[in-house]
Amino acid sequence: MLKKSKKNLLFSIYTRLVCNFVYPELNSINPFNRFKTIKDKDNNIEETDDLNINNELIEYFNNINNEDINIKYTINDDLNNYLENYKNNPDIYFDNNNIKKSNLLVEFLKLSCKITYLIFDLFNQ
Image (cartoon, helix red, strand yellow):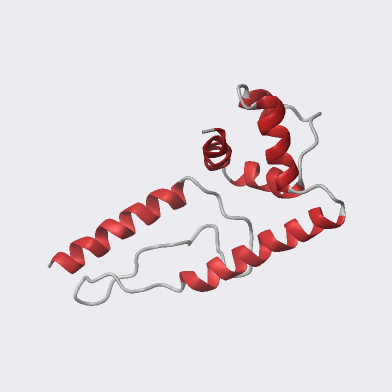
């Protein structure tokens, strides 16, 4: 019984995180049918094929980062710029389209402003 409740708790945490993140359109992700709970005949939650989705998502982000490396402006540059010039005013940094940003940061902001703000704020501490 404890194992089942722990699994349900982890699933709840995982789905809560997923709700704060919009997945890009990828081959293995159907935006209308993502991360649904699959239950067997005894009403136990079955494992899903999330590893495939995560691997594809990592590859997607790596490709964007590689493009940024080629143009010599990466998310590391974004973070340095943010910390040096905008750390007390994140809204100006993230909302201003005239401030140069890496493609990866732009993609992160499209997929989840909330999580992106939180990550950058962690570096502010």
